Length: 117
Image 1 (cartoon, rainbow, N blue to C red):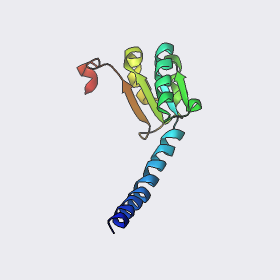
Image 2 (tube, rainbow, N blue to C red; image 1 turned 90 degrees about the vertical axis):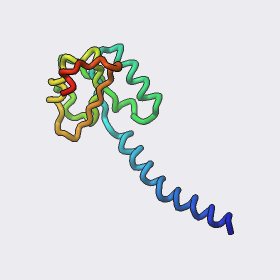
Image 3 (cartoon, one colour; image 1 turned 180 degrees about the vertical axis):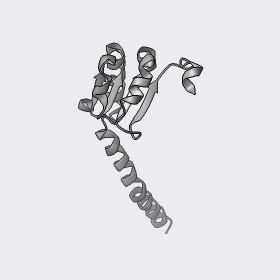
Image 4 (cartoon, rainbow, N blue to C red; image 1 turned 30 degrees about the horizontal axis):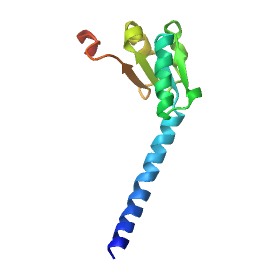
């Protein structure tokens, strides 16, 4: 009897959690990531994203700071603060809509207080 109750709980948990995790994983896997920063930083961040196996390689691209508008159709903006912080307003303006996620990659306490407001 105890075994049946345990088996029932495992089956309920599996059918309850698995679809959610699967949909979330597929949704992230299909998202396109635009990385703003130097070529060296791009290589490092791209390798980290690929090692996580969350994003497909062809969905990760480097956006030069001279051509920020090229990223309009991407769904995630990843900004290296050290090399792209001075263009942050331009990067935010390049978003197609407010649904585009912006992730700022920065060392602790490297973003000045006047940029936090």
